[in-house]
Image (cartoon, rainbow, N blue to C red):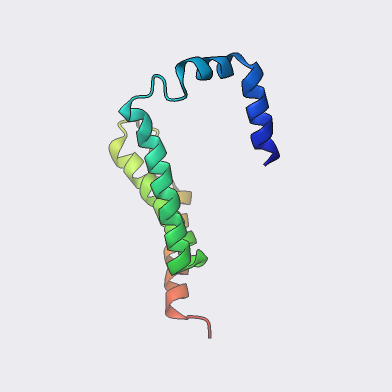
Length: 109
C-alpha cells in the first residue's frame, strides 16, 4: 500500500506525471501493446489453475518440461551452430522424465 502512495506522489512531481496528466495514460498505445499484457495475464491464470487442480509438484514437472521443450525448439529453429543440445540438457531431461515416472508410479500413501 505504501508503494502505491509513493508512486502517486512521485507522479505529481515528475515530467512523466505531467505528460500522463496532459496526454493520458494510454497515449501512443497500439493493439500490439496489449499482446504481452494479455499473454502475461493468461499465463498467470493458467499457472493458478494448474496449481489448484494438479498441485505444486506437477506444476514443477510441467515447468521443467516446458524449459526442455523451449530448449529443443530453440535448437530446431536457430541457424546458429553454437545453439546445440548439450549433455547437461539431455541428462536434465532424462532426470526429469525419470522423476515424473517415479512420482506417478509410486504415489504417496
